[in-house]
Image (cartoon, rainbow, N blue to C red):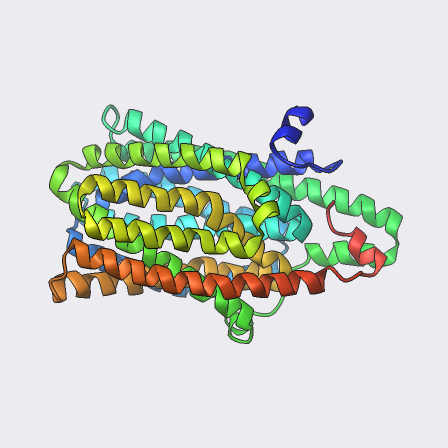
Length: 446
């Protein structure tokens, strides 16, 4: 098994167990989520296509309310306590939604609530996982391993849509929720193994490296500190973190324009929620299959050959072309291909790069500021772009061609920001490469 792994990813001695456990955790998490996403997208049309931008604002408001709660958990409790709580909370929610759907005949408001909830669930669970990854692995390990670990998301993304596609019609889309809850529970158990393994190895290193390393290990198991609103202050005083937040804003704008265009076509073509769920599950399956190949085989090598700056700029550059093609040929098939390319590039390139950006910030920022950007800023971008899309199409009467050119312009701005952000990452990485005291350096998992 180790020899096979070394053909896919560059592993150092002792890394394989932590990497495999991390990959399995993300596999189960994304299997759970991608089983829910086709149901969310199918039900999103139920309340009316014009209501989707309002649902984006609902997600943003919920994020605004939950961020202080997450800040409180990270400031007061060790990661071995609050991370399982996050997963356990969402497992319980899934079971309650399943009961609610079966107890109430009119699903309009349940569907809207579920749509908001799934969007919150995805970002908080994934943000919690990658906060742990940025804490467990060093910057050098992130460059080598994060692309491979992200392949767990795409592998899980194959299972979730496949199950949804095969079972949406036979058992009904709603009955996928308990299956998703079971997968998330397995992910919770695996995540606890990652925490336990890292704690054991760090303690072993500390026992041989002296009191400085022991202090570092103990610090890693304490609460982060800083209070419930610490993340807002961390982002506000750091140009680097602000740059990441704006990068996420542009990324969500590019995605939302394509997403709402797709929803408008799907509402005309498919008429039942189960049919729409099957369509979205099919699209998700092929997107995740392509992402898996790129993540497992290419990302680490592309990072080594091209560097962070070039990879950050690659997807915005691709989206300039994709939106321009859609503007020239605004049909459903072209839209699906362009949106599919964006999603594959996001999973295979943008997300591993974005998570690697946090390997050169403080531990507090890895848990608190990263969560704020990955949740609050992400959904804020969704809400703003959704409202802009509605004003542009419904208010000004713009058609598909105009949306395509608007997306190309936003993609160009996104590319310019990626250029500056990549440069800032390289500067921070060079400073971080300066020698550290031996005990502190040894306390990092290697």
